[in-house]
Amino acid sequence: MRNFLLLFITSIAFGQSVTKSIRLLPDTGQTTSYTATVGEDNDYSINIPSFTDNGNGTITDMVTGLMWQQVDGGEMTIENASTYCSTLTLGGYSDWRLPTPLESFSILNLQRNNPALNTTYFPSSGADYWWTNTFQVNDNTKVWCTNAGGGIGNKPKSETLSAGGNKSYHVRAVRDVNVPIILANHYTDNGDGTISDNLTQLVWQKVPTLTPLTWEQALSYAEGLTLAGVSDWRLPNIKELQSLNDESVVNPSVNTAYLSAIGVKNYWSSTTLLPNPSNLTSAWYWNTQFGITTYDIKTNTNYVICVRGIPNSLANQEVVNETNRIKVSPNPFQSKLNIANSKGSEVYEFYDEEGKQIYIGRYLDKQDFSALPNGVYFLKISGTSTVFKFVKQ
Image 1 (tube, rainbow, N blue to C red):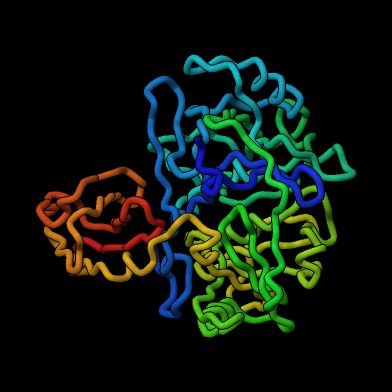
Image 2 (image 1 turned 60 degrees about the vertical axis):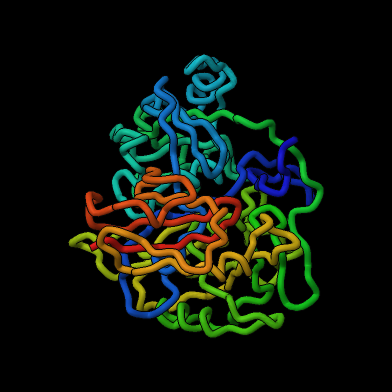
């Protein structure tokens, strides 16, 4: 029987009902620090990206549970893209389709740029954009698309080369490994100034900041917030922030029955725009007029809405006390990791920053990792969503 608690929203069906096909929302993949201020994307690694190459032209996302076309289908119009997916046979499957905006955004990697993808699994194709299955509400000339720079927005369908434009819009098909289901209620008002998203396993601050802040101020505000009796609030990463978007409405592009205070504004994420020689000081934000993600200079001011994880009773059966009890050291490490307070029955999963599994088993402390290249690694305790971040040097 499927674990319905792990399933997650991919598109809004009607009212409070939602269609779900993604188990969990992947992390952005951002592993580099760009500030000494606590609270940036790099400081939190939740549901780290992990992919499996099936060896048949398909890639399975181990976080979302979706299966993707490995090499995209190339440039074409949105009409041809829809037909292409519905007639595609790949890897022995013929139930391919265009992804929703949330699904398409979920595979982007914000530690990369042009393309913002893990090219070990999704080779570069020269695409500027990738189509989704969603047109802008009340305007069938625009389609929601993800872009090679790491954003998502509503783009003119006439802009692609095949329609006479000057941009390259490609198609990448997706299929459901698990049958999507309908969940009756998307949000819950907790009556304490917070809103629970019952599918993302996140709790949101109901009333955002009333005045805009710089990016550094936003990080500090979120880290210092105490609301509803808890203090583990943080600035959301750009994937978490964009998951609030409702493409079926505009001005603002959210469910105003629960998020009425959001308004039409720009909201900071904790995710830095990947630095390059021409732009070293920008971060991603979400604009709620339509729901696009784009970026701004960090010293400019935008609004803030904070996020935290849903408590255990609503989440993924996280064993918070158990995982807090276990201590793993040293960090940084050179060859071996030591484990204290373990029962001996825990299973450890060790990944590199690309999501490649290095080790799985009960004897992590007996492994010699001296041959691994220096860099960032992640340790997850099976059966929980707690992730430890380590640096090898």
